[in-house]
Image (cartoon, protein in one colour):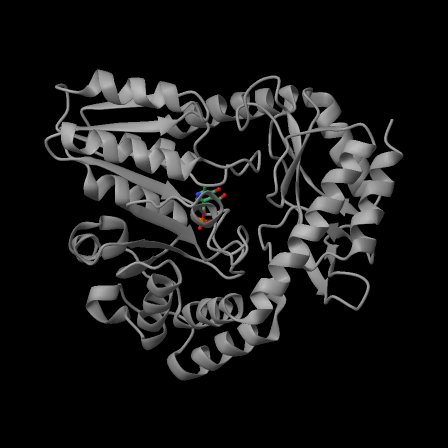
Length: 406
Ligand SMILES: Cc1ncc(COP(=O)(O)O)c(C=O)c1O
């Protein structure tokens, strides 16, 4: 029977992953969240750990917005008004007022003429690549780009797919140069902030390079930036890698599911490009949008970020991130310098990474171990993610646990 053959094969492969120590294993289930108090951030309770409380150092909710009453109330009100699900895709009858208001607010936030909400940043990237490429396009990508870019490039029509070394602009230019005369258009795509390392793309210099090559490709050279880990949580006002570098993408992709604390993705760019996506992007046309309540909560997040409180949260986030980074260095751990709240602790060994993650968990700290193939061999690391709802005392507690690891 075909199913039996498949079962045998997959069981063997799963056993191999377990033996190599690279399987993701059983998921941790959060059963309760204790809200932040004055001198301590939120605590998480997990299934199987009784009333043990954990500090979460592995959440993308960089501003701690997912627990804010402003967002929760906005979501509740919209759910009361419109129901909990959209009931249809956008062009049938699934477009609600919160979707439209959110799109306008996102366009304004990023200084773009238009924006559209997507089911997730993953599908936003896939949709952009699929809709703006043709069989005559060369796709050029950083070697450490997120999986959505890697798979999005496979799905998209293309003449060639080219990869350059991480942040190596000379190699990027070579890929463009060697594509001249071979392809009608070039589409350069990069993560803004790289999610495993917390470093970021030089969007200013990449935009300059694309401008240089634009006249040399018959149908232009486009820069697409997926700044899922940057928007909301990076830069003085949360405008992400564009703000930090002073550069500007032709097409910007972001997520509502990290610093904005909600769920879903978005694209911000020129109005005709957004119109084109609404006509042609299959991930948008044939799949439900986020719920109206989620859109309303994201709008509340954006209002908070744009107000004075957003700047204060971002300033606190930078301060606690710096405290943590300095503490790691003081304890003699290897990290990658930067300012982003993704703080990697390089372990460079699969077993030791697993041992450190387990030690942290035993001592009430949740962090993520990343092994090959998620990161290159030899770069196994623990990814810590600092959040604005961490306090100085939380950071010191985590550092104290780390100081005891042998
Ligand atoms: C660069 C990048 N793009 C996209 C995503 C996916 O975001 P979403 O959950 O909105 O699909 C991630 C999440 O880890 C990411 O790091």
